[in-house]
Image 1 (spheres, rainbow, N blue to C red):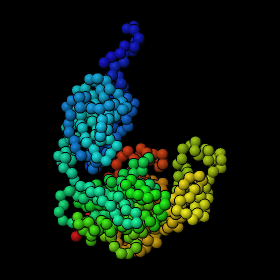
Image 2 (cartoon, helix red, strand yellow; image 1 turned 90 degrees about the vertical axis):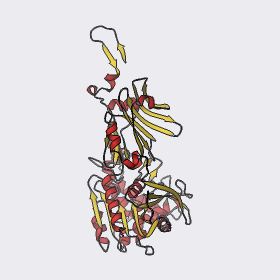
Image 3 (tube, rainbow, N blue to C red; image 1 turned 180 degrees about the vertical axis):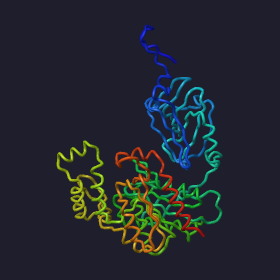
Length: 455
């Protein structure tokens, strides 16, 4: 397809579609790549602009089907919203139809790989690739055949506030299996560790990795989030620990689960809760997984975060702080004093409603006290570029556990459990969250859970 710009005189320029998407014109073509844990789509600069798309990476655990499409232009169905469609030549962008949202990047004369997804932003991906057949053939046979590697059951965890959750079971298992109770991070996160503005997806990806290795798991919506009633701001830290303990009991009561082979696992606040529940006595887990746990009181941790984060803020923000003589750590300490002066579950600090009781309990809570009472194997994983938890605390953590702990300080890993090249920055979180949880972290967690629950 050509459009003449200007006359036919010398020096005129002819704009063609190939000019827009040709490798010689800097834009190149979409590329598909497959690793042992994820499928990724990398677009050229021109394709990103034309389709208003970004690069995409999805964990293999989210793939439900894969097939080669010989005529991908004809396979695109629905309304373009937004994107580029050149009839008979090119389609790039997002296509929507009832119940389906598709990521599309196809061209005339090139086969495409169509991948069905579960639990992701897109329900399907349709991307052109000369080697589409090879990639489809290398996807896991169970995925290609449409055979699930796990089943998921909606459950309710009984307690003062009934918790809506998901029990994930490995497919094809008849005998009771070992299982893991999963706890997500702080704030209004759902069972998958997702916030309405940030898709962390940690517990969902952990659940699927565990199921693929033969372990069941239970994850749940926090109070006031998803399908669980209540108000997350009114829940204290100790309430959240009670909820995890209730989830562990509910997991043990399931007939599909071996109650003698249970593990507690948590990320961020979830790790605080896992350590707390493990130290209570009562139902003793076979092991505890602590992802991004600080081994210091909450007050000290939040001050450390202020010192660590301030230098990573964008230059304009740092300039304004200097101009108005804002000391971030001092401001944090001032807010702590205001929180400590409250007596209600929810209070207004600086004009915002905050979970005051949770903060009061968190400020005074020191996880090392729980670790000293933990008599089961412990795995601790923290990234060395984590801006919210000091990686050096791994040494303190290991020394606090009576039997020692297996610790992993992962280079380049951030608090999101993804790797971030270069200087750590909160501003990079959005880009990180488009990628799956780091496969090394998943492997380490799954390996530990299998070892501690081995018959």
